[in-house]
Image 1: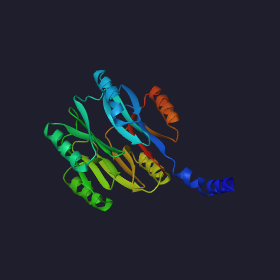
Image 2: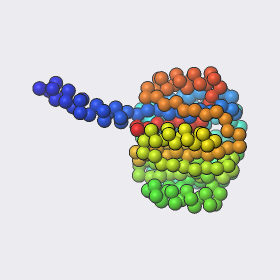
Image 3: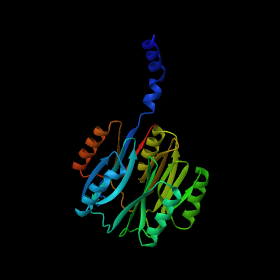
Image 4: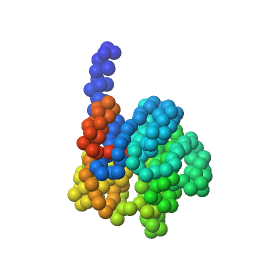
Length: 262
């Protein structure tokens, strides 16, 4: 009787379980300026500290931080032109904002934000071509969209966004080098993939992909000299890493990491 109930459960809910399965996405481009690149993944954020310090000594700089179930991943690259670099993490949003303001006052620019298992993470650096940078925090997407328009009017481009724990956190910067920049919020990957293809044809390139609150957030822009760009999407992390290594050999470099469920 138990086996029969189990079979019925699988029959009814397997499609739901499969559709909820996480997948990994990497955006890669050519002629990024990155001469070498590596990706390190660990189960806990604290476990990244030692390999990051080692990579920093070898001339690498962090170019992306991402969290997915059971792992944190960091992309490190050479040829960035970045000088000093650090990352901070806090659990409370108020502490996170305060820590960022402290580093901005010291001359750092915030260039990446991420959330995972209760930790808010910000990557900050000196030597970036970006000028002024700051984050804004809201509780709903409609307020965030109004803020994006307001920041755009002041000359700030949105370059990263994170939706988690009831917050929308957006990162804005001046002097991004983009000649045009837009964003879209989409319900599923199928819609997102179709829009990416359409924007590629129009000469745009991917700035940032984020999944949160059951939606995809897509930031795309035009640059003066657009280069070849592609993305890979895999459900298995080992296969995902293998595909990345393949494209590294062909001269591509990771420009963004993302993960989602639909």
